[in-house]
Length: 114
Picture 1: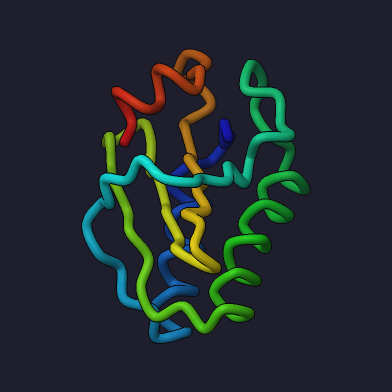
Picture 2 (picture 1 turned 90 degrees about the vertical axis):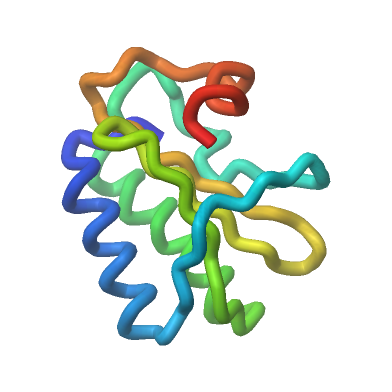
């Protein structure tokens, strides 16, 4: 998901993880079932603040509902952050990309952002 303010979106989510006592671990290499939480958003344009908030809320709900105690985060600083949440036997993934970064396809994200 392309974010107009990547720094703020990641900082807010990271702060929420800290408040919820969720451990933030280094990136997870994984090739099994994956659900992209931003799959319904157009990767060629920045997400609106409402879309960012709704997608980040999905991450928070996964953590709450499945009582997740750790998330896995990969950085391609300063342009991208990928958060992976393992819940219900599936890796749920959200990639936050700076709005100024060129659009990223699934194949590119798999090799460059994670």
